[in-house]
Length: 149
Image (tube, rainbow, N blue to C red; front, top):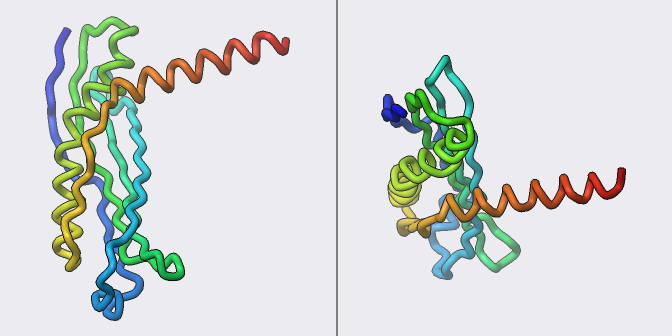
C-alpha cells in the first residue's frame, strides 16, 4: 500500500462579527457551539481530497446575540494506492481527518485572534470513535429496515 500527502490547504475560511463594534464592549464569556463534518472524494485514480469542516458560533447569553461566527474548511490531497477496499474507507474517514484536524484547529484559533477575540481552542477529536459510531448507526438502520420488509 502507498499513502502520500500531496497537499494540505485551507479551502474555505470566513469570519463574521455581526455585532461589531458594540460587541467588543461586552465582557461576558460566550457560549461556543461547534459543528464538525468530514467529506472525502476521488480526484482521480488513487488520488483523494479529504475535507474537515467546522462551524464555530460564539453566542452571548443576552438575547442569543452572536459574538462571532467562524466557518473553516481544511482540506488535503492524498495519494492512496494498492489499499484493500475495507481499509480505504478507514484511511479516508479516520487517518486523513486526523492529519488535517491540527491545521484546522490552528486556523480557527488564529482567525478568532485576528478578529479581536480570545483564541478558540478546539478540543482534540477522536475520528476513529466517530467513524465506528457512524458504522454502528448505519448497521442498526439496515437491520431495522430489514426487519420492516
